[in-house]
Length: 192
Image (tube, rainbow, N blue to C red; front, top):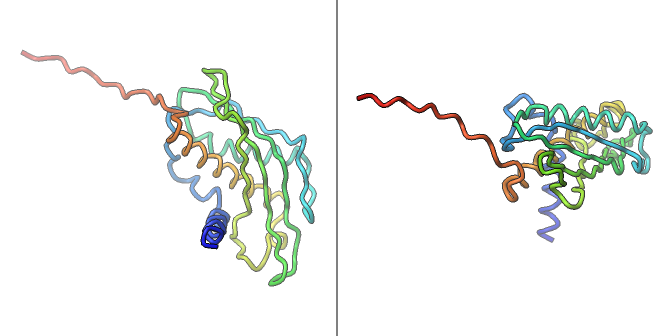
């Protein structure tokens, strides 16, 4: 019971954070990382129950834009590529306040490629499931206050933030993006 409560609290905490809230700050250290290719596809994207309709092209653009917004801040010398597949989404429609306030969801699978090594860093795609930020409060769903495009932008920014968190974790655990160039040291001439 305590574990279930802890997981639910973690999900609420993550959902409450807007994925774009920290974009005005310095990027989280990620080693010698530069995003060269940011590719998203949606051939298998499933629209969830009671979801607003959105085209696959709009899904792809929202995710690639949010990913570029977040990872374009990194300017290391080693190039990496993201292959992202949008698996499913729900863009909440207006519900019934206090009774049914549906929340939006986005599910994405990500593969990270190392350009220099010409190989995947994660053998299996990493799945990211994000919920919309609770910036309207838990009573009123975003279906009342946001368009489908605004909901999708929020979800995409949350997915990009979740991907950054995953990469930071993998870099610490596996050293994915190590190899930050050593700072240049200017040798001082010896005086006699």
